[in-house]
Length: 53
Image (tube, rainbow, N blue to C red; front, side, top):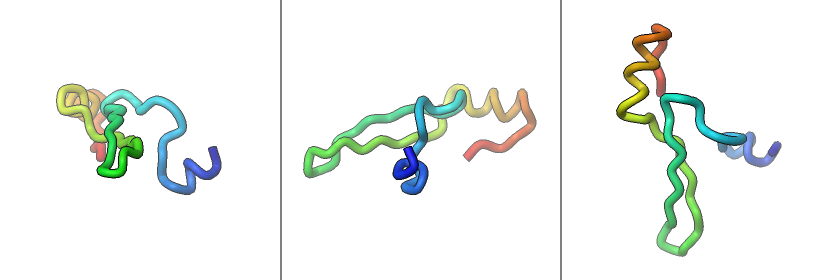
């Protein structure tokens, strides 16, 4: 978990307003990213008055 935090990875599921995306790179390795959810992010920003991303 310390290594994941050092690398900037999330430690579990992405919070609401974000998506967990699993892809493969050209070498076949799994690459996990956490982009904004285009449907929910604006709602979270509106509801809490914060800016995501």
